[in-house]
Image (tube, rainbow, N blue to C red; front, side):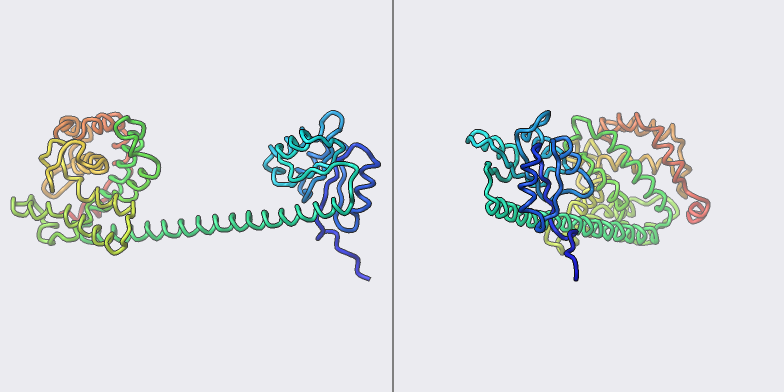
Length: 374
């Protein structure tokens, strides 16, 4: 003969300080449910929070030390036990008592003397409702995990696609590799420092700073459209060549606009790249390019990128110039406050200038990079 498997039965916790009541309730639950017993509220809390939790609790109200109401409050305030349905089983039959019990979170309220068929029916109903809630809770948890996985997958694809484009840019101009890495870290450092600044805190939150960090390597992506004879020229540009070089901001902007049109929906990541690519050569006094906009009309991302880009250009070696010292580069940036750069961005740059220098040293150009420029 095969014995019934009690492990598959729902568990009911009976909480009552009177042995006769426990015996009576157990007599019609036994064989249908697994039964656990607690003779006081403290013991009930321990059993409810154990690894082998009850599926439902039958709770008396009139008990010494901790009554049923207080026990219910404790059960509902503990995340481990808050979802266990509670049915008050009590001699307190006044409407105000029932109202209080239901307001505390009980799913039902049954007064004594009890009718076993009614109690069994109520237990069955609330266990069925609990199974539905548990199913929906598990389903929601699964869906949340799946959404998180998909989002992570999309972000990884986004990052890989960005790095592929950056690598493409590096094949055109090999000296840009460490420049990209340095400016990326400068950008994040400035943004983090300005996060609580009154003029910038509406824009610089954690999400935006992450976008700036990821998208700033593409600030010069438009240079892939500049002819090699100009992009790789080993000396200063003529005025005509410089006009062509200046179009890299428009080329970068147009490439991102084309991508956005294909998607037919706004994408913050692409918006960030577009802004940086198009506006990082604008100047605070309106003498920059491509549009000659000034002041706060220049997007914040472009203003931050301008400081990061110019600082790195100043300290970097080029075939037509020697690198400037960190101190000289800082002095030039300081001098450009209010003309080339947003004054508040410069003030913040000066506060973290030593950290800029550390970033520059960490990602300094190696000998192979320098040979490619000779």
